[in-house]
Length: 254
Image 1 (cartoon, helix red, strand yellow):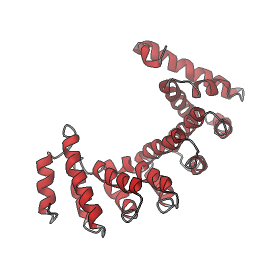
Image 2 (spheres, rainbow, N blue to C red; image 1 turned 120 degrees about the horizontal axis):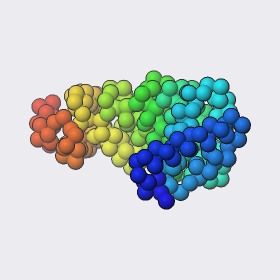
Image 3 (tube, rainbow, N blue to C red; image 1 turned 135 degrees about the horizontal axis):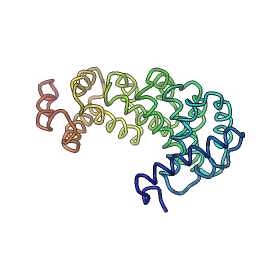
């Protein structure tokens, strides 16, 4: 039975049970329960495990050394689901203490399987949103990495911070404006659209785009911004027509 096949009360009980098992194992220096949950086919069981591990890390400081040892050990697992879960757990820790898990992301960016690499993107998002300074400083070094997938993953990963604070990431995004790889360019255009539809964000993004030199990319980004204001019309501060009108008053013509 899957996690969401259970009713709300049963789900809460299962999460408590998972946390208790993880805690008991960590106190004994074992990792059998974590390995079991981290390899589960149900993504929500795996999520419950890494969320519980993150909570235990901060609630029981005396267990932090064991947690680091367990994370580092299970990151060597041949099961990509286990590696993915460990990266997500490291992301929970990194929301408050990035430096302690930095090495995990430096290694996992290059994982051979896409699922752990996607966990890196998701973790950069959640860490960068609430702990931006060390995370963005770390991410910046990879913006010119020779591997296009690394550049794309970092571009995508810093997006969430930009949804409320676009000026925090626009200078980083600008370093990718001449990237010749289609996947990187497409991700860049997507991210620019994603950071432009909340209150106060459109003005910041448009002002910054005036300093960009790649006018073809800027044109594509502006079209994406206008399209996002329709696709996210129930969440955007401006209507699509208002966004288009504002852009046109800023000397961008279509």
